[in-house]
Amino acid sequence: MTATIALRRPRLGSPTLYTLLAALFLVAATSSLGAVFGVLVLMAISTVLAWRHPAWAAVALVALVPINRFLILLVFHYGHSQSITTLSQLWKDLLILVLFARGIDEIIARRRPKLHYVDIMVIAFMAISIVYLFYPGNTGRVGFMDRLLGFRADSYFLLAYFVGRFVFFERRHLRWLLLSLLPGTVIVAVIAAAQFAWPNWFNAFFEKLSFTAFINGQGGFGDVEAIKSRGISGVNLPRASSLLLGDLALAFFSILALAVAAAIFLTARRTITRLGAGGVCALAIASIGFSITRSAALAAGVVLVVMAIATRRPGRAVAVGAVLAIGMLVALASGVISTEAIHALVNPHEASVQAHQGAIGTGLTLVEEDPVGHGLGTVGTIGQRVFRSEAITTENWYLQIATEMGIVQGVLFILISIVVAAEAYVSFLRVRDLALARVCLAAAGGSVGFFIVGNMLHAWEVPVVAMAFWLLAGIAVGARETDRRADYTRSR
Image (cartoon, rainbow, N blue to C red; front, top):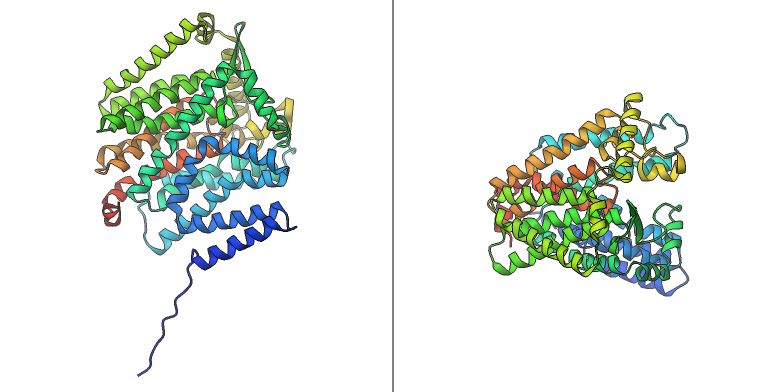
C-alpha cells in the first residue's frame, strides 16, 4: 500500500507572511532605505489584507471616502515628499484593482454568476475606453500619460462595479458598508457649517497645512483656496469644502451620503435608528447647501422624494424637510444667510446659470462636429491640465464622455445609469434580507441623484466617491441571486 502525503499549500494571508511584511516595514521606517520604500511595503501589507479580507477592505474604502483627500493633504504636509503623496493618492486605485482581481478569482474558482444586461453594458464601456486609451486623439497634444489619467477619470472607477458584483459579502459586511459612511457624513457636515460661518479662519488653517503647495504639486490644477468665495448677482457666498477639499466634491459626496442615510432612515424599524439616520439625511442635504451647489440641491430633493415614494414613507421625507426648513429660518433670522442670497441662488437668469447653458451648447456642437470623439484627456479635469485656458468644459458628464470617446460612449453611460437604477429598484422590491434591500434602495436613489447632477456637472470626477457608489451598484444588481444563496442566508 502506498501512502500519500497531502502537502498543504501556504495561503496568501498566512501569519508568517504578515510578520515578514511588518518586519520589512519596520526596517524601512528605521533605516536609510527611505520613507518611500516604507510606503511601498505598507501598500504591500494592505494588498495582502485586501486579498484575504475583500469585504472588509470594501468597508474600509467606503468609510474613508469623506476624509480621503484631507488625509492625503496631511501626508503631503508631514511627509515632505511628492513621491509619497503620489503613492498615497493611488491607494484607492490599488485597492479597487486588488478587489477586482479577487472578484475574478472568486468567480473562476467558486461560482459562475448570472450575467445581467448592465454587466454587458459596463464591459462594453470599459472595452471601448481601453481602445481610446491607445487612440492619440485628433489634437496631437495629449500624450499617453495624460490619456491614462483621462481613462482613470472617466472609466477606471467602474471596476468597483465588478467588485460589488463578484466579491461575496455577508450580512455583517453590508451592514457595516452602509453604517461606516454615517459618522464621516456627520463630521463633514459639521465642518462644512463651520467653514461657511468662518471661511477665512479655515483658509488660514489649511494654508498652514501647505494647501497651496499641495495644489501646485498636482500641476497647479484645483482651487487655490479650500473655501472659495462665489459671487452671485452681487452677493458673495463662501463655498464650503469640508474635508473633501473641494466644494463640488462635497456636493457629490453628499448625494451618496444622502442615498445611504435615506435607505436606512426609510426602512428603519426602531425609533433610535430612524432618528439617527433621519438626522444624517438632513445633515447631508445641509452640506450641499453649504457648498452652494444648486444642481446637487435639486437632485437631493428629488432623491429623497423618490426614495420616500418607493418605500411608501412620504411622512418621513416631510419630517426631514421640516427640519431643514426650521434650520433655514433660524439661519435667516440670525443673519447667517440673507434673503438677497436666497433670491440670487434661485434666479434662473443668473450669470453662472447662463454659463452652464453655454458650456452645454458648446459640448453639443463639438459632439456634432466629431461624433467619434476628440480622445481621452481632452475634456474635463485632465483637459484643463493639458490645454489650460484652451480647455473644453461641457458642464455635463455625458457630453464630456461623448466629446472624448464619441456619441456611443455617451449614450452607453446614460443607459448604464438608467438600467442600474431600474435593476436596483426591482431588487429592492424582491429581496427579503433587510441589509440587501437597503443597499438596493441606496443604489437606486443614488443613481437618480447622480443622473440629475450629471446633466449639469461632471458628477463622477471624484474617483473615491464614484468607486463607493459603483461598488454599491454592483451589489444591488446581483442582490436577487445573493439573497437566494445558502451561504448568504447562513451568514451573520
